[in-house]
Image (cartoon, helix red, strand yellow):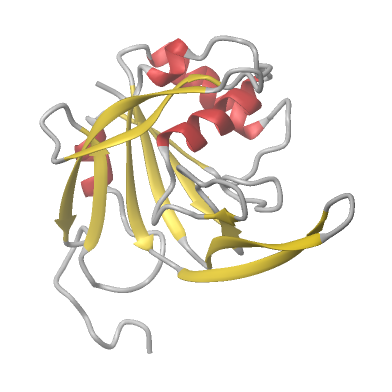
Amino acid sequence: MPTLLLRLAGPLQSWGAGSKFEIRLTENEPTKSGVIGMVAAALGRKRDEPVDDLAAMKFGVRADRPGVLLRDYHIAKAAKSSYVTYRYYLSDAVFLAGLESDDKELLSRIEYALRHPVFPLFLGRRSCVPTLPIVMGIRENSLLGALENEKPLVRGGDKLRIRYDNVSGYAVKQDLPLSFDIRHRKYGYRYEAEEWVLPPGGEHDPMAEL
C-alpha cells in the first residue's frame, strides 16, 4: 500500500492537543489532526467541508530531530484588565510524516496540492511557517516500512522514534479529525503504537555531528 512522505520542519512548530484558556501546549510531534488540517488547506477545503477521506488515511511520524521545547508568553487585554497567556513551541525540530492509503490517486492529488497549496500552510499554528521541501514523494511501501527505510533528514546516528496509527497500539489519543468547522469542531479517538529504529545504513556514530 503506497505512502506519501512529508518533511515537517521549520524554526517553530506547535501541535496543540487539549490546550485551553491561558496555556497553549504542544505535543512532542505533529498530530494527525494538525497534518490533516494542513492537507485540507492545501487542497482548498474550507473548514465546514468534510474530511472523512483524509482522516481515513493511516498516519505516522518519525522524529528525526525532536527539537527543544520553548515557552513564550503573550499579554492579552480584556475590557478592563490584562492577563498573561503561555504558548509552547518546538524549536528547530524536524519530522518525517507519512500518510498511507490504498487510493494512490488521492495521495497524488495531495502531493500536488502541497506543492501548489490553495491556502497557506503552517505547522500547527499560523505563526509556524514550514521550510521547504515539504513533499518527499510517494513510496511503494507500507506506512511503517516507509518511515523505517527512509534516510534520515538530518545528520546523526541515534535511534529514531516512530509513532503511528495501529489498532493494537498502547496509547489512545483524541486526535482523529471529524470536523474542522469552527461552530462545532469534533475529534474522535485513534490508537497509536511506538517503535525505535536505527537510521537506515548503520550503527550510532558519535562523531557524525563533528
